[in-house]
Length: 314
Ligand code: CP
Ligand code: NVA
Image (cartoon, rainbow, N blue to C red; front, side, top):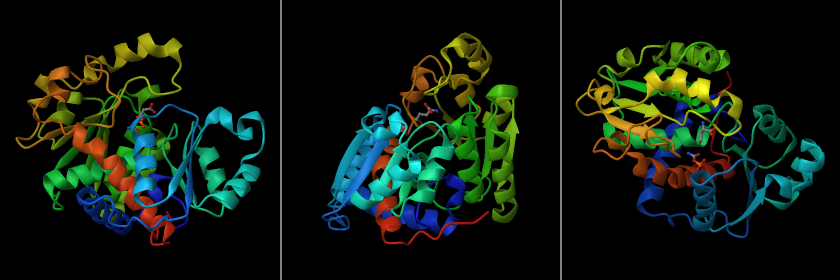
């Protein structure tokens, strides 16, 4: 597989390989510090980023390469140059490109027209590199035997909810998304993709509207901001009111398994989707999770550039 455009393109074997190497990069970031020697990686973002940008730039540097950061408006792409033409130019200069933008279709198109690896660093639909960091964190906490465990996402049915369901299905996990129904539910497509993957992986995919039922005996409670980048401000008031019952609070956490953890991709809004005493409490693994953004992106780049990611055709 040339690119990582969508979470569902990863096979279980790819994920295991990426996480194994990422665990080594967590111990020693410079283990493969010549893999990208004399090479450049473009990082193009039309949305803000703290973790993904820093993780990507440090990952490239630790592999011996040079990151080139370009913001949305910097490229002629923002003035109407086509994605296909841009893809050809970037392929001529760089060894890979990491892109964060709005439309998934733009990332897919870039992948189709470039000859270098393209990595999706978040779209409105998907956030595959985040899920790699999440699953390395899950593996560190629970090991590889996840039978009988329940992995729960609560809140807005956004890009993170979609990716959570799909990645969990690939891992053969029992994954749950507890979200409102209607326009703030996970995408129908993501639910369908995850359900199909779960049929062959032995996983179980549930989408429900009851936060207490979801939290009961869960090993992980995961949440994300209620207003994502690009969400219409005009909907804020209504959306926050609808999502209020899905906030991760201490009483909700008390329903979970004894060894449960709290996860969040960050940035967080304490007092909105999560209570301060949960995200800053003893069950929270958010800093380790954020740290793994670098280790996993470094590992992904390392294996993608060597042509070692096989991928899975749906
Ligand atoms: N979790 C995540 O993608 O964070 P940033 O938006 O800061 O990159
Ligand atoms: N759902 C959030 C994730 C941020 C990492 C967003 O898209 O803004």
